[in-house]
Image 1: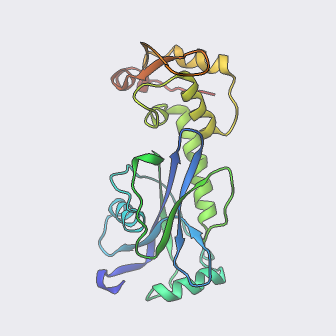
Image 2: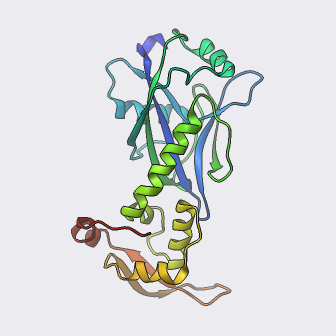
Image 3: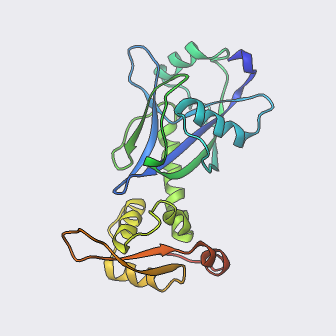
Length: 242
């Protein structure tokens, strides 16, 4: 690490959520640590003189191979005991020049389509994997707290900014697909009638003269998201789905 002159006190952690057409997953790495199976968020120290946003993108790419993501900073975590677990202490001593240094981390999050990226574990990441958000997994350091905070903030944000959800859908989609996505994000079943009524009164949702084909159920109509209409009209107003 000394080659790049890392700041021993500041790190970045990336909380990446992915939609696989059915459920929301969180991106994890498996640390290289002999005799241990430890999973964590992609994160590492910031280089001296490095911009935080640049550091987040760099670290994510170095550990997972993912690039060109929009990463949004959402909170800083600085508890004095965030690196107190003996397993974490053991790992820190094996990879850092100043293992005793107190580290404050700046957390970033993003929501993506899981099949839009190729994954390549590197550096101290032995494996890169998507883990279902509804199945808790013990993570290293205070990464469970970081992940849970990022997830809660994202779920609140999507209620006010629906463009986040539409970015995860195909160019043309059905209302069923849209509802499945929202239910996966908010973690609850939504009333079909009310959901469709709420969505259909928005001008940014454009009905297409096209329906599903080769399906066992009644073919559903396709829709598309009109980003220009959203930017010009919708985004000016405060909006909540629930």
